[in-house]
Length: 379
Image 1: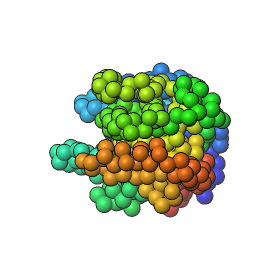
Image 2: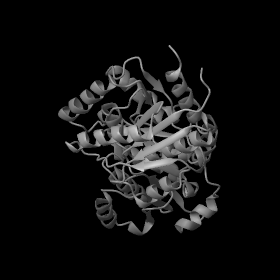
Image 3: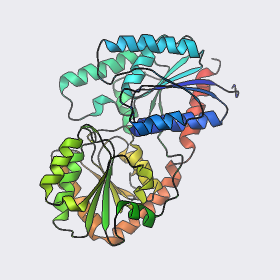
Image 4: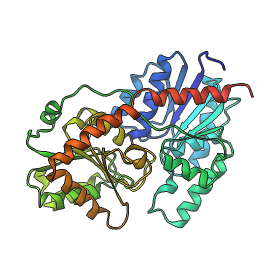
């Protein structure tokens, strides 16, 4: 198998969140390993922090307009992507991340390069999606799978979904996400930055304030738990299209003074302040929030979404609650245990530290690099 440097192009439409974090880690690590890495990104949804991170990358980067919504603009984006790849190439590997960039990579002209796609959560995994939406998104995934050399699922549930629908049949691979670097921040330092005391019991939400992440569930679960646990404080780290609704929910909660909300903070540097992270998502692939929580030795409460079993399973590092109509009730029950049982908190924190050693580090980079090389090996 060839062990020389590869020419790799990473493509992403998302302007932040776990998928962007994933791509930043791949780009940095592959560049450090001597590969020729080119990043094509969309500035349309990118926030200032994401753009600054891209500018700081030690690789070639290039903006290209891509939109999250479906429309005729996608045809223009696919043509523009093909032209950009021709100018900057040729490439050995072109790797599209999330549904839009993944679709454009499969539609564009890429020459002899191998096309790789990482969904970072199939839209069809959303339990709230209607039949028409499921038919549209799943049908598109099946059709585009025919032009896919390899599909990388980041969780066991995502892999099972792809196989069940015969998406990229026989070309699906499981490479779980992993956190590469963790800031050296103490619990006391993180709490000081958030204005929290040593005696507070802190449950936090980290993520984009969007329909997928369901922040309204977090606010309601915290409101109901705060009625019974006086020492409980809640932290929101994130911003997004649902920010206005979150503001209204906080104002109506009666406990707004017990919430801390920071929209643009670097979550990794504040996670050590938490006694638990609560992830309330409707659907996921394998959220980086789970992995970052483990890296900070923080227990997890999460809805039953793709990736939850991969990370938590029976390891004792957290609790998984059913993602059904009674989900807020179940989140309150889990929050009550966090808020009232110090022994359980300590046991789960210790389990989180052990689980982090198994999942985080350079494993994800190594496995992705091995897959790239296997696709380029002579048949």
